Length: 220
Image 1 (cartoon, rainbow, N blue to C red):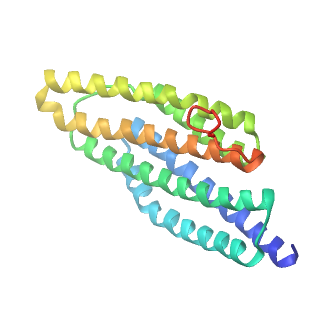
Image 2: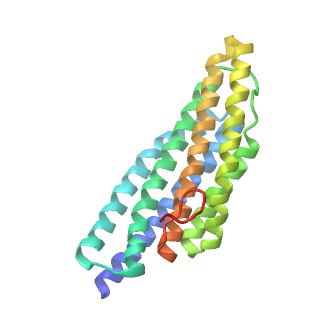
């Protein structure tokens, strides 16, 4: 399609890599802040949200320019459509990380010990985030399918944590505020897993030109 397209295409890939790196760091830092009750790190995460928002706008504008001026076809068109959707999902992942960071600040002001254990959920969510991004970068539909298959696991963990917190809040009403903050953490971790699944599904569309649901089955 010419030098102009190639230069803008390369610029888009560079900006996407920057977005991916920034969001991955945010999520990793968020989990460390939660695990270590690190208020300073939580505040840094919240401040970083503006950078992610700016990147999202820049990527959207570049994709729209390429779509409007170059009118790409086939796999190039699917890549640009996928890049647009992945960009939005990455920005929303950043929002979820900020929500968890804000919950860390609230939990710090409401000491009460460990009520639920997020370690397994955190591990699976981090695996899904890294996996969906690697699948997109390497056009790996097999890895994308693996990510889709892990989503139900995180959903079940979220339901289990909600149940544990509901029981604990009934038995310890003076800790209800802490339970609410922990509920927000669980919900936002589950949402990050959902967004990872969205990206994995978009990888299948980009490479194979077919749409799949969260279950990994084709839509007709």
